[in-house]
Amino acid sequence: MIQALMLSFQSLSDRRVAAVLVKIIFLTIVSIVILGIGLWFALQRVFGWLNVNDDGFWSGLLSGAMIILFSILLFRVVAVAMTWVFADDIIDAVEDRHYPRQAALGKRPSLGAGLQMAVRSIVRVLGYNLLALPLYLLLLFTGVGTAIAFLLINALLLGRDLEDMLIARHGAKGAMNKLPRLMLGLIGTVGMLVPLVNFLVPILATATAVHLVHSGNSKL
Image (cartoon, rainbow, N blue to C red; front, side, top):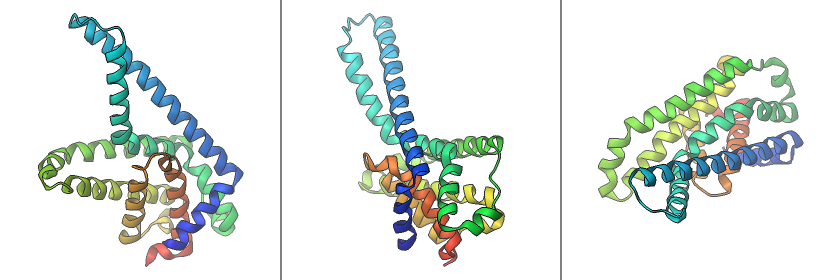
């Protein structure tokens, strides 16, 4: 696992991977800006409906607070979407550099197949977290229970997403054993909670999954 993580950082020096990183950062910032503008207009409408005299300050303040909250809670979903959009470019770059034989044997999934898997992944993330919401609320009194449950559930989901990307390309040979998959999902989920680092996580997690599968460490 450690070796795979270290190798994944080398991927950041690849021009193709660097281009993907720029796209992810740009699209994420654009998404946040659009979300902020939409929230501001929505709150303006709400204040108007409630006959509250708002000069834009409170709607702007609330929009900013909601964006921060959504960024924390929904970044996982956005990151998954971004990863599915650019995953094949990342996998191509890593396999061409480190595993040319596996690259030649693998079959890149079609755009339609990738979009279907992306939708299933996003629905899975939202669905499982909504189902777990009562558990999150129940564990609030423990202080750390909610955070632990959130990390474990999303670690399982992220690990499965990363595995699915490789299975789609390499069939059963792209599968990982449960423990390495969970560990990678946990590292990725924690990383997505760290500002700025979370932009790198989709790339690093995908590259690490490639190294785990092709190096044989995923079977430990």
